[in-house]
Every structure is written in structure tokens, then in C-alpha cells.
Length: 492
Image (cartoon, rainbow, N blue to C red; front, side, top):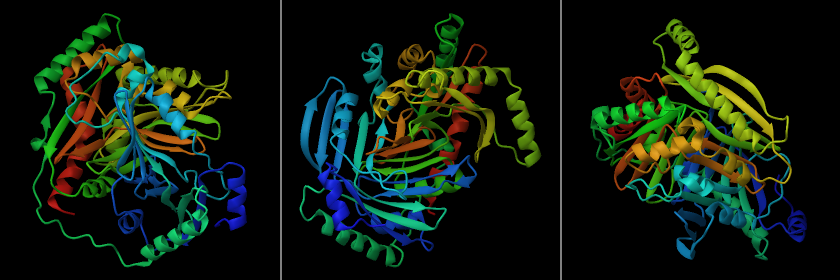
């Protein structure tokens, strides 16, 4: 699996400047979490796992070792850091175009037999990145209480990828041949990582100061009466023909002193989902268990999977089936979902070849720990000459987090919600050197910063919405995280 020195030099000779040097090791005695604890020794690291359809393990789990190079964007200010030192700090007109230009500086070969992600950029695009895409949104500014970057991307050069099907682990070091010693250094680094894996389990001491947290301790940025009023105002916009639907969200916050990773550990047991992630940014952590893809780009194809329509899980299989039938017979839920299928087809159609857009799954039920959803899938063949960034511009943010029409719905959200959304409603995931990408919508996600944990969730407002029920829906969507935080704070 590891390249020979001659193969490495051959790739360098054709202009490749990040060349994956790989070692495959048996991993049947390890888990993604144990590997994370053994290999990760600093910030700007991450762990990605997947339960497909909420019920079976995805093939690959990704452990990202601490990144040296990081991009952060605050508004139109773009900062590049290398090992914690700022190497560039500048104002840019179009942060997305600037980031794409940086990404294009990195060229890596695609090697047979490796996982679909072997290196590139990992992190998030916050909800307010929509202002870089739609000029009408640029003047909208909600209160920013968290101070998180609008974009944070880490250069993934060293990673470990589990193949859950084969019980193997790929250790990957992307080496820069500009250093004449890059190849032997990469081999020595792989030796060191393999030795760390062979060590006994990493120390994980018992929680020193457990505390009791329950749902009642979370404080909303949006008092209930104000939330209900915002729903009623949104309904007025719907009835006036301004919008068809608006997603109104609330942020709930609670002091949190325990380990951020423990929230992830609890959440992966309570609410396994297609996109599970723990991202450590040093001064903040992002923990999520998202059921919904924003967009996937793979092999020239773009995929979106709109989710809309929710019921709680039943206490038995019979009750689950009854709730499924009730959900699929609910005219409000069906109308909302069909609208979002149309929105997904429109988004995908903007960057796809004519005639290639298809709805490959329509209104199937997927079950998760606390709720079930109606899910559809829309795919298209990307037009030649377009890049991942073109796809992102066409699909971001997800209509399931805004409403429709998107731009007007976002204007209503900015008017009625009291705080900047930040990570919530944006996207978390990876963007490979090969321009393949997989991004989850940042929902069912907690942000931990400055000793406070924040959870955000929304209800979808349409003409016949009942304000109290939309508030309950937003609380139901946050419940898995409330429970995970309670478990983590008490001690696992």
C-alpha cells in the first residue's frame, strides 16, 4: 500500500505537492474513539463517524490529527494560521473565491484502494456564509454572541481512516515533496503513529466534578412568548404571499464544565446518525449527530437529501408504524416536504447537466433515536468545468433550514431571530484535494465555547402552523442533545 520512493518521486515530477504515504494496519482491537484518544494530542483535530439511515454503520470513520494550517473567516476578513502563527490577515471581497484559490494550490494524486477521503480541508461553513452568495443578505446582521468564525477550515494532512467493513485502519501522511526529506520523514511518522496505536488504551480519567444538568437548565435566547410571536409574524408573511415556509429557530444554552468529548460519546449512543462529528478548534468544540446531508460530490455526481416532516418515536414497533402512517397522511407535512424536494431539484439543477436531475428516493421514512423523518434524495450530474465551490454556492444553505423561497425566508429569519446562527444551519464536513466533498447540515449540533454549551433547533412555519406546536417541534429536535449533555455532565 505504501508508495515506493520512486513512485513518490514520479508524482512529485508531475507537479503533485501533497502525496499520500499510507500504511494499512489491522484495527480489530480498536474503535474510532480509542484511536482518536491515542493519536490526537492537540486542537484542530476531528472525528467523523456514520450510521447510515440511523441503523447501520457507514463504511469509513475518519480521525483527523491536529492540523498545522488553518483558515478562519470573520465577515470579509480572512486569516491563515500555520502552527498557531498568523501568516496572513487580509480583507477579501469574496471569501469563498479566495478559499477556492488557496485550495487549488494543493495537488494530490488519487490512489487506488484508498478511502474516498485521504486529505484536504475539514471544518465548517457557518449559516451566515449565505451573504457571500446572495448580495441581498449582506446587510443583515444579527447579534453575534459567540464570536465564532463564519468559516473555519483545517488542512487535513495527517489522518487515520477506519474501514469498518474490512477491520482495517489506514494511516495517511500527505507529504510535501518540496522538502527533499519528505518521503523518509513520512515513513518515520507512520512508524511513530503505528507505535502509538500498539500502546495500551489512552488514559481517560474519571470526571472530577460531575454535575446535574437537565432540560430545565437550558436558557433560550428566544423567550417562549417572543418565539410564539415570531411564528405568528412568519405566518402573516406566508399568508401575504411573501414566503411559502420559514424555519424559525431558538438557541438554548447551559453552563458546561465536563469534557466536550463526553458529549460526543453520549450522543453517538443516544442518537446515532449518518453524520456524527466531534471537531476540536481549541477554544471551541462542535459536537453533532446530524441526520441530513447538505451536499455530497462524488464521481461527478451531486447528491442532496431533503428531510422534512417529523414525528416522535413510538414506544413499540406498532406505535412506530402508526406514527409513520400518520406522518405520511399529514397534508401539512407532505406539502412542506414536496416544496423542499422542488427546492432541492432547483438547487441541483443549477449546476447539473440538462436532463440529469432525478428524484431517486421520494418520501421514505427514516427512524432515529427520538424522532422519525420523511426523507427524499435528489441527484444530478455536475456540468463539466464546475467545481465543488460552484456546487456549494448553488446549494447553501439548505432549504430545510431556511424555508422557501430561500432568500426571502432568510430575510425573515434575520428580522425575527434574536441572534446570529453561526455554525447552526451551516455545514460541517470535508472537501478533498480531489474536489470530492461530503457536508452535513449542522443540526442536532452543540457548540461549546467559554464554558457554555449551545444547542439550536427550529420549527417550520407554514400557513396553518400552530405556534405552540412549532415551539414543541424545536424542543423535540433538541432533546437528544439535552439528554447527551445531561449524561456527559454527570459522568460516563
